Length: 286
Image (tube, rainbow, N blue to C red; front, top):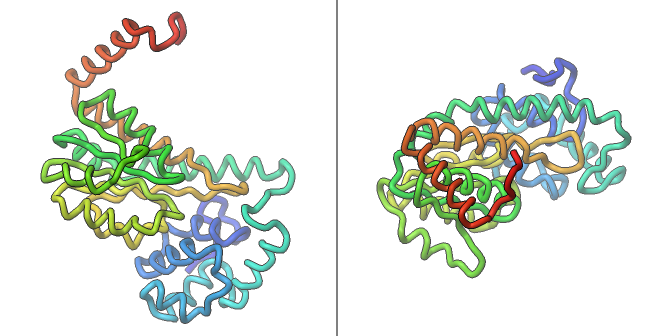
């Protein structure tokens, strides 16, 4: 297994989550499962033993060891030292020093954007959303702005697009309205709420088609969804970047608009005219 960065062709360096993102496309399914477990437990990774991580991931110890080597580490002891060094030198989130990282950030961002918008699952997701009786978009915490952006764009292309949870909402009441012919778009980037898996299963049990929009750490949830739109978040800066996620949902909404054709365009025009009549947007600006 190569230990080179897919983007730069250089040896893998930097924080472990960046290394995982760099080599993720070439990992085997079992190694991707192991990598997802590492991403999920980044904050307390050093408190585990390698065998415990393997058990959590449902993979063999050999698979976990192979993943460590793929990431450029000799063994898990070296991973622990790496994590201690990150915390001692920078804490969490990790602060990048100086402006020299900007070029690397832009390169990483461009690659992440490309991977997001070229997802082979996007056409199927667009087809489902365009044909659905109703669409519900769900996202919590850091996933909520992405869900809100998607709902806003889809609402221009088609009717009956809902956002949940709203303030004061009980999600069970919203899921009760879903059934065959509907689509649930579940946005779930890492540090998902504890109930995420339960909501995913309940949504699928309604008979609605589930589209999962999530980073690679959601690999264990992907099997429940009809479509998984895998979207990288990794950045060389201190915080995750959601630019790829925002771009992905824009591409999805554009594809839905195209599939729905003249009817969708008429809806866009009608909405714009309503804006004008209500005076809701500035006039004379592009």
